[in-house]
Structure formats: structure tokens, C-alpha cells
Image 1 (cartoon, one colour):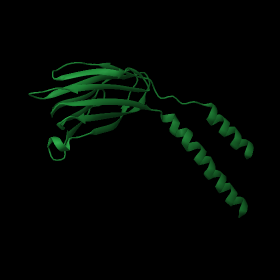
Image 2 (tube, helix red, strand yellow):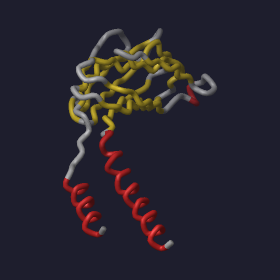
Image 3 (cartoon, one colour):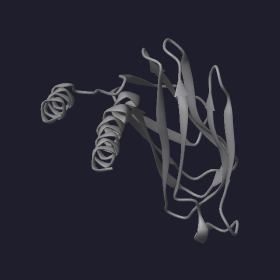
Image 4 (spheres, one colour):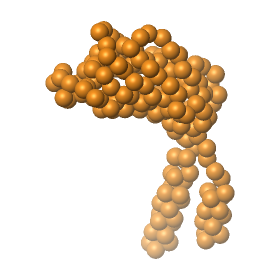
Length: 175
């Protein structure tokens, strides 16, 4: 049994798990927004933007691509100079997902500071990660997208499962 456990431990330590590579591209349209890409490729990509003085609604969009089927965490962070009031957080492509974002009291003092979702990405598809129909006072925002390495969960689950099997065998031998 000790040899099996040592073999499994060595196997787990010798295998490295990398998250799927992502590619983020700027899709610029609209007004009142200045946006840029901070990190364009890798397992975590990010972009940021600045919303100046506005007299209407604004929107921001980035294109997201993965060459491997994976799940990703999309996190928007808002650093209000005055406050984020309302808008739609969007993820569109093969699957469309929109969620309404609103500050709790609708005032600039209680603006939204962050929002995140977990989404599936299919290989070869281009997705849009966007904020639509937003109303706000001037603010800075950032989006960070991280691929979730699904096989890593297996490597964390396997030792626990082997441990439980070992305890079961020990209890069977003791009985």
C-alpha cells in the first residue's frame, strides 16, 4: 500500500496542469469610454477603462477567445470616483448571459464595486464580455478573465478519494 501511495504522490507531483490559453481583443464602439487591454493572452487576461463626463448611457466591450473548451471566471471591478448606478453585465456568443447591475440605493454613494460570473467557453468561438446601457458618474473599471483548469480539481480530489479508500480498508482489516 505504501508503494501505491508513493507512486500516486509522485505521479501527482510530476504532472503540471495549465489552464486554457485565452486571448482578449479590444472591440471599441460607442462614446464616453476609453478602454485598453492590460494583458492580452495567457490563462488570465485583463482590460481596463475609464468613463469620463457623460450625458447619456455608455458601453464597453472586449472580445474573448479560447482554443480549448474550458470554464472561465469573468470579474468586473469598478472604482467609482462618484458611483456606478445601473447597467447590464453581458457575456454573449454561443450562449448569451446578461445580468442587471444596480446600486443598492440608486445613489452615487452606494455604487457597485464588483461583479463576477463563471461561464463556459467553447473552443474556436469568439465571445463578447461587455457592460451595456450603463449610467454612472465618472469611474474607472477593470475586467479580469481567468480560465479554470478543470483537471486540477481531479488532482485535488484523487488523493482525498485514495485516503478514504485507505481508511475503509483499515477499518475492514480491524474488524
